[in-house]
Image 1 (cartoon, rainbow, N blue to C red):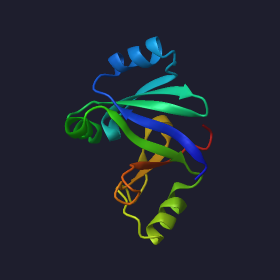
Image 2: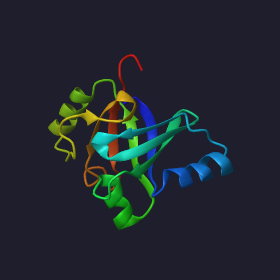
Image 3: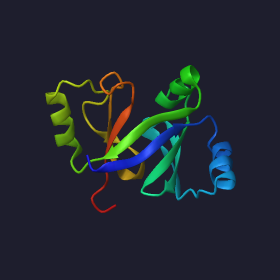
Length: 135
């Protein structure tokens, strides 16, 4: 694990959330995209060495939609950057930690991602993120 890449924040309405984070707090969204595989629309806002990732569900049955329905808006996950997601997952599996994604899946910004189960990490949903090599 290299560093914290971003903190994911679940929001009901991305445009309304951006009004707060951009207009009131002075942050600037550098990208917005829809990640079809995750059923979310995301905006990344740089904050020092990391990003805040605002996540709006595009479908009520998405993981973010279910999260908001059961817990409300708020911090969803912490993502850490890794050089090699497959070897990281192998190491984590060898240590017996429970995974949500035993294999990497596509994420925002052409990254490959995988989530560790929060029961394995003391209640924190952790995401591993391998950036595209030319990113």
